[in-house]
Amino acid sequence: MIKLKRVTLFSFLILSLLYCGLVPFISAGWNPYILLGLVTDITPTLFRSNPTYYSYGALGYNAGEFYEGGGFKDAAAAHSLVRVDACLRYFRGDVTTKHFECSVWTVAVSWELVTLLGTSDAVVGVNEWDGTWVTFTFSTPVTLAINTDYGIVIAPQEAPDTANCIFLDEASENTFGGYLGFAFWGTDYVKNWYDGVHGPRMKLYEQL
Image (cartoon, rainbow, N blue to C red):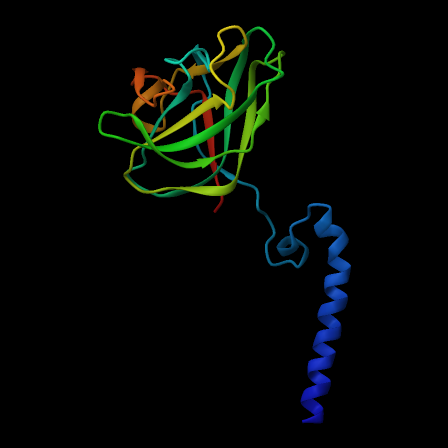
C-alpha cells in the first residue's frame, strides 16, 4: 500500500512538472501533441486544386449574386475539410469594412443551398487583392462524405453591396467533381447561374 502511494505521488509530481513546463508553449499557440512528440506534423494536405485563371465573377454584389463558389463531389473518398484557399480580386469601393467567409452546404436536387455544415473564420477585405490566394480556415473540420454533392462558397458577412465588393476567380479546370462547376447563389440560397466546365479557383485541404 505504501509502495502504491509512492508511485502515485511520483506520477503526480512528474505530470505536474510536465504540465507546468508546457503551459507557456501551449499559451503561445503550440500544439501539445507536437510538444510531446505524439504528432510530428499537423500541416493540412491539399486534396483538390483548380489553380489556373480563366475568368472571374462578383460576389456579395446583390441579392442574386451573393454566394459564389462551386460544387464538390468525390465518388472515391471522404474528406475532412479544414482549409480553403480562394483566389480573390478587388472589384470596387472600399472592402476593408467587409468580412468574408467560406461556407460548406448540402445541396438539393435543384442545387439550392440547403443545410449549412460549417463556416470558416472570417477574413477582412483588402483593397489590394489582385488575383490573391486568400486562406479560409475551419476551426472545426467539415466532413465531406463519399459520393455526396456539396456547395463550397465565399460570401461577405454583411448585406449585398454593389458599391463595395470583390471578385472570385473562375478556373480553367474543374477538379472538384461537382456537376455545378463555377456557380453563384442568391441570398435566398437559389442557384442563379453555373458553368459546369470550369470550377471555382480554389484549393481544398484536409487534415489526415
